[in-house]
Length: 98
Image 1 (cartoon, rainbow, N blue to C red):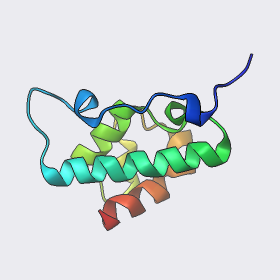
Image 2 (image 1 turned 90 degrees about the vertical axis):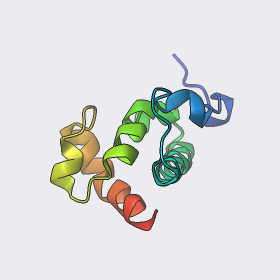
Image 3 (image 1 turned 180 degrees about the vertical axis):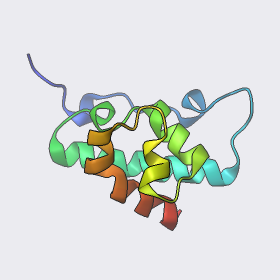
């Protein structure tokens, strides 16, 4: 079984992922885009598809919630202990810089 290269994966449109029922604020969109860029670069370095790092829906939830602690980040659906340990500190750093 082979894994597609990151460059073969589709480039998802931000608008299609964010909840269309309520337009996201500019700040939420900016945080989401920064998280997507980080995920893309990490996935490329690890040679895995971006969704292995985190699904778009998870990045949307993180951008919307804007957690400031690992504990708060860990409460977001989809952010399990392993993902929190591997990526939590980096995600919080991105949110602080957004």
